[in-house]
Length: 335
Ligand code: TMO
Image (cartoon, rainbow, N blue to C red; front, side, top):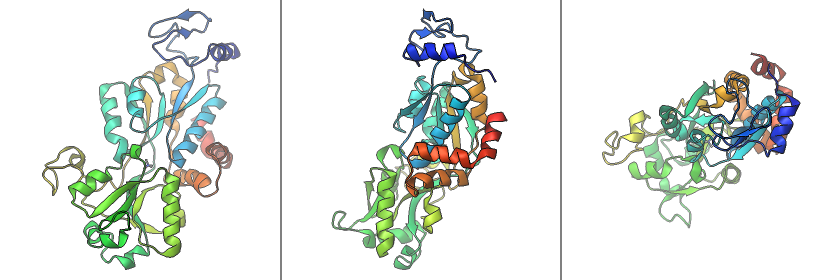
């Protein structure tokens, strides 16, 4: 493995480090130059920090730090960048982010694939994990609303999910806006008697779920798998008309001829790693390591549980996870 020399690391630190591709950069010899490569030999590992996206759900925050720690262990400088999931693919295309390691197909697939198509982002790896997101309820709701998990059955008993604020409509709690759940569009396209409300965070979703379960109150919320939730509560996803790609892009597809989203999400969605187009040229060794990272459903739910159930910070959880998985870490780091 080609390690960065201490001199280069110190230079990068004292220069304020991590200048972006289009600003003057400190080359390996300490000279400042401008231009595409900034005097850096792009065939060698660069002396700039690697920027990893941080999003607002637990498994992602933990996994980002696991990956960051492994790269730091290999001698790289890492920067974590908190960024909205609506902006991240454009930012990665613009060269402001190197790594996004949890790209969920249902909400983010189209924006990611657009940038891959534009040639500025690379589809770098596909995890083993199968993903699903959607409307979900804990088991006891099945007795309160016969016919579940069918979406039309759910709609027929929308009234049991109503509260004073939603009036005659059932209340459906989805995630923060940047999770792009498509639920407002779905309710409209399928003409459902539900009001969509946005939780501010995953924690807010789980707090409501916990309170409802304790009193067996009817609840339907946004959930996903892999997540810690399935280890604690049994429940099911609502079954909407089967997903096909055209459903999200072609209004004429499906029962509503005028609107998209008259379907559910994919039930076996991908989970991918994307990198900025320059990443493998600038950091070939890091890129090879990243390409060996493979998250499974079990890994993701454990990472989420360390934060959402055990109450660790993402950093503590990442450290604990690395310590508990030496064989996996060895496989990823040595190939
Ligand atoms: C992107 N998410 C896992 C929160 O649905």
